[in-house]
Amino acid sequence: MTNDVQNQLDSTLMERLVLEDTVKQRILHQAHQRLETKQSPKRSTKKPIMTAAACVFVASVITVPYIQQEQQERAFQEAISQETIQKVIISNEAYPNLINSIYVEENNEIIHTDERGIYSYSIDNQTETVLVSPTENIEFSSVSLLANENWVIWGNSEIHILNRATGKERVLLEDYIDVQLIGNQILYLGFDDMPVYYLYDLATDQKMKLHDLKGNGSSFTDVRNGRIAVVEELGEKTDSSVHVSIYTLESRKIWQTYTVPYESISYLTFDDDRIYGQFSSNGSDLSLGYLDLATGKVHILDVPENSAYAIYDNYLALSVTKEESDTVKLFHLKEDTAEPIETLNGVGERLVKPRFNESGKLIVNGEGPETPLYLIDTKKLQ
Image 1: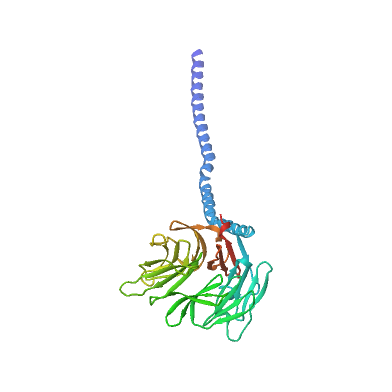
Image 2: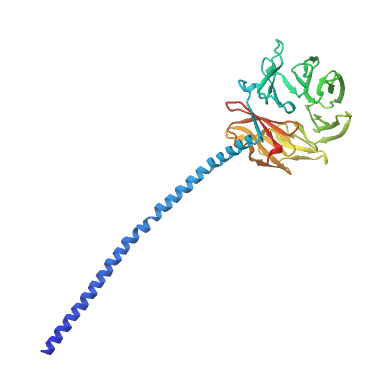
């Protein structure tokens, strides 16, 4: 009896142990399946997260230029509000009539022409005054124009002179080219027997010979701080070179001469100790550089490709390529390299015709709907 009970208990115990082991394995298997089911969504979220991150990156790359442009436009408007840049709009004036306009800082005015006459626009009063009335003999939109606070000079085949204080006009009846207005004098290339540069005193009507041209090529002049630079191409086939003569305005005598081994120097700008220009050695390859008056050596500048330039001290304005056109950009010269200045980057229109006045203000024309002129005060630039 006892052995039967024992055997029955042992049998039952083994069955229960086998059952428990089977149940245990099943439970573990089910648990493992549930664990995999719970973990799989975590693994599947990696791809959407990476895709979202990629989208954010691409969006940021696309957005950055727009943010930069917005920042540049805001900086440009702040420069206008702080009077670093002055925007001048002459209402109802056609763009071609303003492209060769002159800013006279002493009167804070813009001198310009149209086909009918010559005008002064007061920036302070926003009013326009007729300086020279229409005549049947002159189409004023085609004349060369010079002006300061005392005089207005214009002409094409002869030199017309307006004394702004008296309102009187007179004419110099002689052929000329390359006129410069220097205070109360004009410098021009006249043709009597041979081409000669003359200085003409507007107040006294006295004319004096300054420089006889020796070469048979082109010549150019520029004036700065009481000194006159006369550059002439000698045009010799065996030895092409450019001759540079520096005169003092007060004595009208030569201060220094240089001979430069280039075929031509055009578009002169006379700085205090340098003469800038487009240097050419083969007739077509033009490079912007300068003649160092201290050493007599020519340095070619490392600057972007450009179609026009203007320079004052270390500030350089270039008409540089922009997409299919060009626009004016501002640079700071360090050694012989041009470093960009961001001041004009925020303007939303093409800028043309860079030129500096004697105090260092940059004047450019805008081609937007308002056809404004921008006056940039380089002394206020950061």
